[in-house]
Image 1 (cartoon, helix red, strand yellow):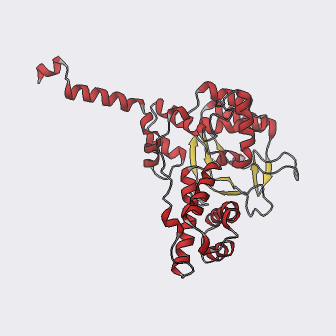
Image 2 (image 1 turned 90 degrees about the vertical axis):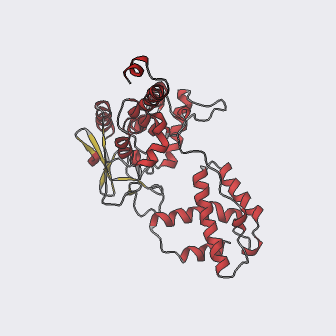
Amino acid sequence: MRKWAEEWLAQHQVNESTRRNYQGFISNHLVPALGARTLASVTIPDVKKLQTAMVNGGLAASTVNDRMNILRAMMATAVKERRIYESPCDGVPPIKMAGAAVDPDEIPTLTEVYAIAAAMSDQYRLTVWLQAGAGLRISEALGLTSDCQREGFLRLRRQISAKANQGDCVTRFVPLKHRTADEYRDVPTPTFLDREIGNHLKRWGTVEVDGVEALFAPRERGKGKMPTASTYGYHWRKACAAAGVVTPDKKPKYTPHSLRHFFASAALANSVPIHEVSRWLGHRNIKTTVDTYGHLVPEAWDRCRDGMQQALRPSPVLAVAA
């Protein structure tokens, strides 16, 4: 399986990001579980066991399904090349995913946001406000550079690479999700966030990395590594524990992504049009935003109640006029 995975990957001409995705699955999941097995010896129970292991390892259902699709393609090619008679993946259905709509219980309260920010280490406190106050993804927040800040808004062009702290990293900054290298996204910033960014710059300054002035790079050259979404998890867990924002089994009650949910829900609750929220979040299309947050628009509930009331039980005044 290890050898076949290498051969299969070599057959595919894909971009760097996709290749990293494929290689990550092969190195971190496929090879440890099945690498020493022959193609013909892999069974349906083996594939199910691999799928379950990824779920138990904390990967989201959508991520597990993406990884399993890589294995499906790999084994389908093996069938086409007559290396095996049938694919064991055919007997393993994708994981059923819950609806895209965010559960209101997954959105931190304002008090919890403040508590997490207060408990966050000083150098990374700004990331909390960038996510909660401007809806940035954690990779976008960690990849913030001084040239992003404009008068009353941020112009985002890049995010931190998942491999930024590895020795073989080609570039520490990559294009935004769903964007090419020459595209950008503008996000308005409230006054308090402009002040928070200014305070961070006064205290910590910037560090030149790959030709740009990064806000969250290690303070001393040659010491420490660039933070990534993965390494940031340590600081997040520590802050949630210190703030008491944890589950009964002492795990963080939320993830950094929950702060984007806070941003979206707060904007919608304050009557910001959902198509604007979609643009600022950087979603591929507005359907994603509507599916995820549409149920949080308070006016929609009121409009529905009023409309159905008038349609089915019109007021006496209206009934007489009619």
